[in-house]
Structures are given as C-alpha cells and as structure tokens.
Length: 376
Image 1 (cartoon, rainbow, N blue to C red):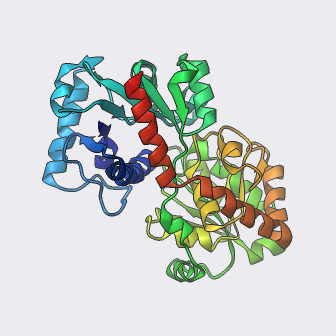
Image 2: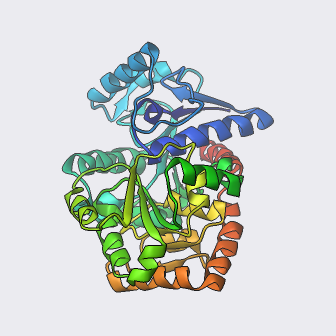
C-alpha cells in the first residue's frame, strides 16, 4: 500500500505539529520497509530534516517552490481539488496534517486530530488561528474516512463537537524522541553549564502564550517561601508567542529569581529536562502535552494541570492541580521540592509510564490504521 502524508508543516516554522510530523514520518518509513508499504510525501520530494529548527522555515529553493505550490493549491478553496491527484500518483490513502486545506478526488483520506482547543477555549487563540483550525476541523476532519487522534480526550471532543462517528476515530499516542529516553546525568551537567544554571531549578518548556498559563506559574513560584526560592530557581524555556505582556511584567518583578532562556534548541532539551527538579506545566488545555511526556521519558517529576488530556497522559505519575489555583500550584511545587521520597516516586512512575509513548509503537499502530481505513 502507498500512503501519502501531507508534510507541509516541515516547510513552515512551528513546534508541535512540525515535531509530530518529523518523528512520525521517520518512524512510519522504518516500519513500512518491514511490511512492504510505501510512504510518500505531499508535495513529493519533501525531505525530513536531520534536526528540528522550530523558528525557521525549511531552507532551500526547492522547498520554497514546494511551499508556494501548496499555498497556491490551498488558495483555490476547493473542498475536493482534482489537481491534488496529480501530486499523489499511485497513492491509496492521502493523510492530512493540520495544514491541509482541501481533499483530493477519488482517494481514501485520513487525518490527524491534534486538539479542539479553538472550539473549547477560543479565548486562548488568535482570530486567525481559530479560523484556520476550525476550517481544518469542519472541512477536513469531518470529511475523512478515518481519523487518528493523539489522545482520547481529543477523540471525545471531536465526537461531541464535530459529530464525527466514534468508530471513525482511533487513538494513537505520539511518541517521544529516543534522545529523551537516553538522556544522562552527563548531558544534564553539560546543559546546566551551557545555560549557567548554577542552582537546582523547576522547569517550564513551551511557547509563552495565554493557553500555557505562565503568569499563574510565576505567581505560584513567587508564593513559595523565600528560603526555597533562594535554593531553587524557576527556568522558562521557550519563545514568546502572543499576548506575553503579563509574563514580561512579572519577570521584571522577580528580582532575578526566574530565568527566561528563550528558545532552546531540540539538541539541548533532553539535558535540560534531565537536570530539572521537576517540570511544571499548568496549561489550561492540551491535545496531548508533549513536554509532559518528554519530562517523564527522562525520569523527571511532573506537576501539571488536571484539565484536558494531561491527566490521561500522566496517569498516577504526576501531581495534577487546578491551573486556576495559584495556591494549589504553589503547594504542589513546595511538596515536590521538600519531599524527596515523593519526588523519587514520581520520577520512577514517570519513567515507567513514558514507555507507552514510543514512536516505533505509534508507527506500527498507524500502519494498521491505514490498512483498516483502506478496507472501509
């Protein structure tokens, strides 16, 4: 069977979807070689880069031409575009990945469902993002023969909000890159030295935008007793997105007890996670929550939100709190930092639970999904 994957996200700046497609495509190709399937990309010739650079579009003249081609095809605004078939020769299934704007004629189609936060929590998104994501949900997800959901929570949202039949959606968890499972104390020490992190630290990783709840994280940290803040700093790793003024103001009032590293490259993240006393990730809504799974893979304790997919991902391997409660969040940080037995137990449970988030398993399940989808 020949499966064509929309790999447009590899040509664009971005983090979540781009990371997913990057690792998923590599894993799908490895799994397909063993079973006689073939994995192609739309537009043909898109290469999976050796490394991820989220802030930059893929370089190269050919990639620029490919991106312009995709943009032209999308601009036609056809729900079923016959021109797409020209780019999918011999494909049995065309799989859509967030940036798909139209479907081909006469092809079985499937898609990845990431989350429905633009429906559930529109206040945390820009109008442009809401319009694009809703268009994908209503014209692509709802029309496909099969859907891969990255969590059961997203699956339930899609059934309720988009009216997609339950039997059409299959939950296949994303994986975590092997570099996280292999992270060592040596890597953690090198990363601490590189970023001059002399003290133990609590860590947040992600784009700083309203949905991630960073202002409440900072307030909760500043509520910790002074002696604890003197010993353990808060480190924020990630670029500013939109509406970051509140976070900027709070950082200015922190008297240097909080470090904002800005964007941290993928090559440094395993060591940064490994060296943390805990990951604190109080997001209001996640379709999956990759930083939480990454922290668990390196064996770091996790404090996260009790909303959306996050409790599903962490199970009993984290402390889950109400993200609106600064008191709960601050208390959780205090307990994990003060109770070494609790921190050790969380780290052990995290390492064990993370084993279910392997890209090899995701690829194998995805190939079974494609074969089932073709038969429907």
